[in-house]
Amino acid sequence: MIKYRDVLTKISVHPLFWVIIVIGIFTARFKELLLLFCIVLIHELGHAFAAAHYNWRIKKIELLPFGGVAELEEHGNKSLKEELVVVIAGPIQHIWMMAVGYMLFEAGWLHADLYYFFMWNNIIILAFNLLPIWPLDGGKVLFNVLSYRFPYLQAHEKMMKLSCVFFSVILVWQLLWNSNNIMMWVLLIFLAVSLYQEWKQRRYAFMRFLLERYYGNKRGIEKIAPIEVQSEDHLYKIFTKFRRGYKHSIIVRGKYKEHYTLDENELLYAYFTEKRTTSSVEELIG
Image (cartoon, rainbow, N blue to C red; front, side, top):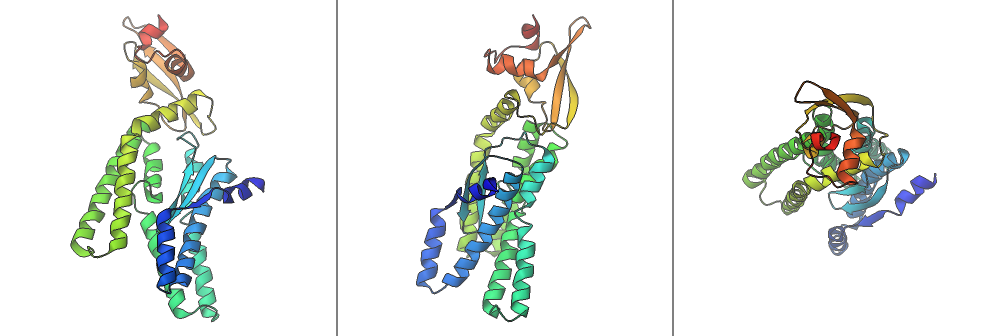
């Protein structure tokens, strides 16, 4: 119970949301904005409570006018099942919210204008968050799906490239048919900045992924998969073959058909503790 209560202490409101709230007060739209605030809050609490259920470390929950961002101090070593549950726990909140809204409207407890505003914003926030663009929920699901097939670094890069493709489609649509929508431009700027920052920091994210494996965060390990490498391969090249949800044994093929088997921890130890960042496996064995 305490871990769920602690989630509430992580909530913060983005300055842009405060601006929208002030505008709502001066334009007599406070009720609508209060409903929007509640929709966004419940969506993000869905993510946060699911993360707390799995004992994930929650850094903060920041609320924005069109959604929110739950920042988690986890770097790709949780099980893919857990990650999927945490991601969809946000969008699924809109289903019961719309059901409750419909019942209140049918019972005559919710005015028609407020009801349609509530339902429309639920649909918009749900649809927007399901777009396969990082860092939206749809982008995270895309990363999860790609991680089932590709190594971490490759899955991440493919996810980023596909996110850019989908972002470009939305941008073209905005330019041609929705150019007067100021809020949509704000959302697109937010997505563009987020994509740029994520791409710029992709190597740093990969290092955090490796460090978590090295320091023993292997709760998400579900299978063991060997990786065949050549003795002259450098450690970093081997790390690019590491996959989420797998522990790897490293089979080293030598020049004269002899081979060795190493545990992934031996390579991680050499890389992070011994600082042998440019060494090959051959140098490590020798």
